[in-house]
Length: 181
View 1 (tube, rainbow, N blue to C red):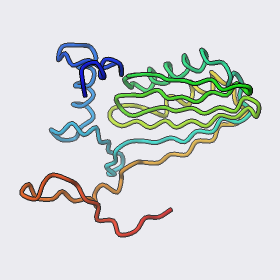
View 2 (cartoon, rainbow, N blue to C red):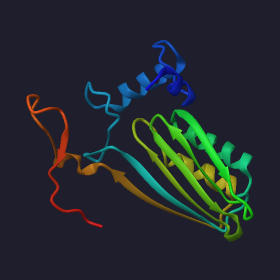
View 3 (cartoon, rainbow, N blue to C red):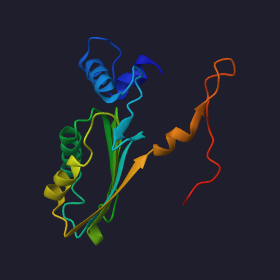
């Protein structure tokens, strides 16, 4: 990836930059080994990251583009994540918004249907972050009548993955024979 492309994503390549320092700090505190894999561990379970599926019901201000952007920025801040880029799109005639905050630790996405007072959000983060902290920010920002949160620990099946020998290459293969849906 070119330096220009990284710059457009809000990243830079200078070792001493604030972005580089933040990423290095998160890598060290998030990794349980010398690797920079950003994996997490909770209750003896190692996983890639926490994925929250959040539904806001009877919510307000779901058509206010500036409010949504500021809310996503606040979610990133309270979760302790690193914002790389935000892109939001306002739809007409209903005023719904779809968008994503791209993070060094993954993403937060939103899709809103203001005519129904409904918003669907994904908050997925790895590393030394607290994605659950974003829930209170969303409650304050959109005053929903109901909030539904489902949590999934992504990649917890990693223990089933094997790494091929160095002579055979470094690609990973999954040894999972079946997948539950």
